[in-house]
Amino acid sequence: MSHVRSTMQKKSLSPAIIAIASVIIGIALFIVLWPPSERWGPSNSPARQGLYYLYVFLIYVIPGAMAIKLFGQRPEWLAPPGRYVEGAKYSVFSPYALAASAIVAAVATVAGIPGPINIDTVAMVTAFAAAYFGPAVAFLGTSVAFILRYLLGLAPWVATPNIVVAYALMDGGIWAINSYLFWSVVRGRKLKGGVKTVMTLVMAFVGVGVHFFGWCILNYFTNNPYAAAVGSLMWAIGPTGFVISSIVAQIIGWLIGAFYYDSRAAGA
Image (tube, rainbow, N blue to C red; front, side, top):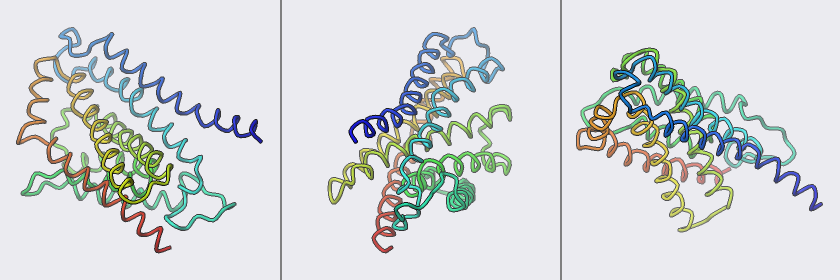
């Protein structure tokens, strides 16, 4: 029995090792190639876009895919809240997950319509999806939503259509990673009461860090020379930028998604 358990643990570690190795390689290549250098050309040059696609795949897409794979190894997580039946077969991309992805994509797209108050409502929706549905829905819903927002003219800051797919995949990877980290720490350990609330907040801030690194570090410092990247970063974290509102929106989304899932599970 112990041998079987050891074998299962080794198998479950493989996707995690792949994800960690991919991130390390991506960050190492960022440091070695140093895209903020002037030698990569002006902002959004073809060379910079090529590097950006490379980093997105290594740091976010591959780890996001591994997060989905790890999530799929827990059948009780794949079922709708409170509906798990032991012995039943569940799939990562079940009709439930695909329908949820479509709904998340639609809601996130509508949430991207500019309003009079600068609140990152898209991040609120995606954080909710990550906490409630898991990484597969978070990845699909977020990626599709970004492409739809661009096609509908709701992402005017995108400099060139060549980069849209990279942005969509990075955003999906961000929320897939964040989702698995949340589920493994908060739900995997079956936390309860005040400890669960505190750890939900802790994981929300971890998610903020993963989101910030992608959009404000990897994005700005790959697609721009150093001076332009610093200027973009200063705007993003300033009073007119999106970072402050995004932090608030993400925390709200995480809390609503986490507690709504618990209430549905308890009701079922």
